[in-house]
Image (cartoon, rainbow, N blue to C red; front, side, top):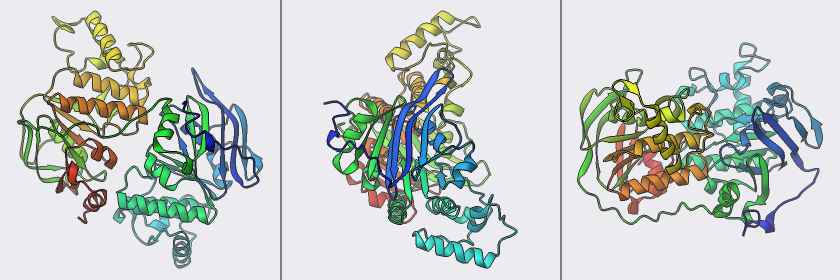
Length: 502
């Protein structure tokens, strides 16, 4: 069965006046790249419609066209049955299109109300505060957003900040709402609240495009799904007639498995030990407060938590990139580090694939002989790495910054996992990656565990933590607030711990 046949009973071909958005035969080319090639997409009024695809499939380009950031080279855009042409984002906003980005665009020191009206023609100074608050309270109540207009943004949780972003688009008259990876930084409870808000918005006539890699959430909240691959439309399907596995197959063109198949761990000797570790943030505030943890050979210990609760500082103190304020860290073996910021910490974007592959060993034989680089040895090693780790690159001389996120991560994996280290520190190893790349990285980490390596996995993706970890520790405001075995793990309990309520 092909991926197109997987949900063939529910392939949709609708031409109806109830459509909010019609993108017809959209094409967009950049130098050397065809981003969209005759893409078709339809969004009904009051529908929640998922847009899926691997990195590089064309999703971002298509949404940038709909938001007025790009003009298509070919094709037609229709809103509510009428042809439109956007020359700038302000044209799309005026037409009723709003987008909530994965990284919120709020001013922390401003109130909710100030953030909502910021940039509007009326301006902050021309608003009557009492009338403004009353209007925003009524609007938030209408859509179940529950937010205090007088609250300062820096006091709000991540989930509350997201509600502000949604309210901001609604207040500007958005009838079409685009959400880009909207649950990436939310606890399970906040995810449920968000999905409830989206259902309320859709029931009141808002049309929603939901961009996500999380298929469980797509299945839970979306009416239909459109899948893109390599700039083409693979198909549009009803979620009620499909499964997660079928959608994944449509995305990558083959069967994908994320089931937990590894046998129970057989932990060996301790390899990584932290005792009463304290460290400050970049602002000089306490970020880690008395952390104690041990990782043994042959196990994966997962650190769960909402982003911003000390994960980056924990990664950096273990990797010796941040000074300890108090405590001690013992490594019983050498450390491989897969950093959370693959571009800022893991790779040199302006260096080639070959050069990045030997960053750890550039001063060692055979890559360095008497102070001179042995280019033949570097190239031969890089070619082996490209082949072994399936790095897709035009050549080993291609700049690392030109590669997709998945291939950039494979360079780091290849470099870090090729030297028989006893400890692997993997921080946010699949952040921003598509299903195929995630599957590959998970297999690599499981292989390390099976080979007797101690793996510390720091991730804000709870599904990833549950899928890979033998033991789970929850990090909240710089403290370890819970320790659970994989067998005991309960997503609701973990969500409470991540919110500091466990």
